[in-house]
Length: 209
Image 1 (spheres, one colour):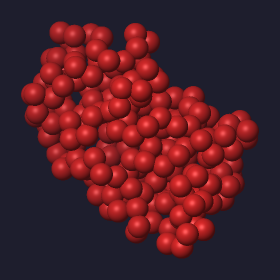
Image 2 (cartoon, one colour):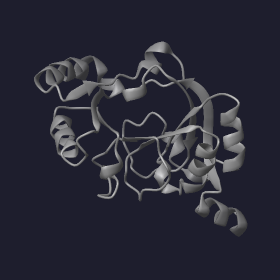
Image 3 (spheres, rainbow, N blue to C red):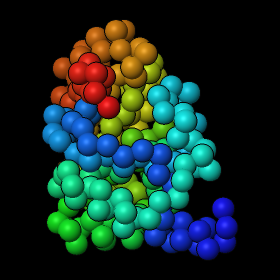
């Protein structure tokens, strides 16, 4: 990457774009709603069960002008979800300003492991044990989505829930490879602890992106 391009990426004027697509949101609070997804490359959180490991190396994904991405969004949707990888590795200020000027709602899905940036209509925080969220991120969370891979993850979920605001929606989601076993346990847990809701990866059941 040449210096000029690197400077643009550092400012968020360009982003390492892995993919972008229009689909139905499959998880969490906005399940079932149409949205344009922007998947940004780059992640060092290292979840062993990650289903987009090809996103981890940002160098594999071409730096793309945020203006170009926004023009693509405008063709399809009035809501955009920026995900990754880990989107907060990059400054989100520039692209979210552009999107909101076009009256496009801005949503993010993040581990919270990097400094907060951007202007968000919805902030989905999904903490991971391998690299915890920064303290500055928790107050911004509209939604806390905890992935449940084993029983110890329930304790981790409660630890994280204690750090977000009272209005934050709380979700438990079975890790896909353990869904048969863990969904049953999540159902039981939510019935005993009704502050939580269940999130499922419905897009995988529907066989859509």
